[in-house]
Amino acid sequence: MQLLVFRALWGMTGPLPQQIEQVAAAGYDGFEIWPSQYTVSRAELMSLARAHNLKMIVGAPLVSTAEIAPTLHELAEYEPLCINLHSGRDNMSHDEGSAFFEEALRVESALGLPVAHETHRGRILFTPWDTAFYLRRFENLKITADYSHWVNVCERLPLDEADALSLANQRAMHIHGRVGYEEGPQVPDPSAPEYVSHLDWHEAQWLQIRQHHQQTGQAVLTFTPEYGP
Image (cartoon, rainbow, N blue to C red; front, side, top):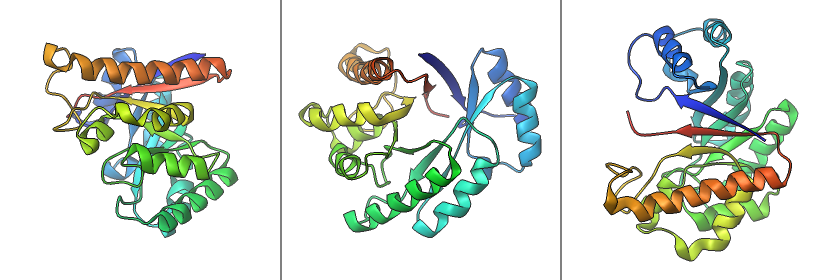
């Protein structure tokens, strides 16, 4: 199994070509970007990626089911390795959330490009138990594991959600490597001794995801380390 490490452009400063050059110089395999936040054209962005031999993960926030098809088709034109979405709202009912994922999976299948839905606060997959509900309902649903948000939303390390975490780790396609704690989705310093238990718990989840990929013969696992702007 190949582990590909990406750099999120979130928080980087300076002209976009300079940012991408810095990503390449640092040895990353690619970069992660929401194209809608930049004025650069699709052709220019793809040219920059090719010039530096970098892969792309593209994404967008999607609130309504009606946005899914046009947004996914537009993102697919960037020829990314995969698409990562901030999907829906946390106040959606299970029926509304199910309708959202039904449409997302339909469009994903037609595109033939993998789509992951991020476990992010404020979105449909904002808790371990809600995520488990949808993963059990939709066997082809894939996630981006950013469990820092779950620790923040639960206001605890979700040790009591082992079954939900086991299922999520099996369905994680992409990892956002950020360490959360009870007061926020990002500890002030992941190397500080007071956050050892938080770091250990997050790393254990990432290792389980990697082990599942290896055991099931999946070719690639992608990982984006995150530590704020």
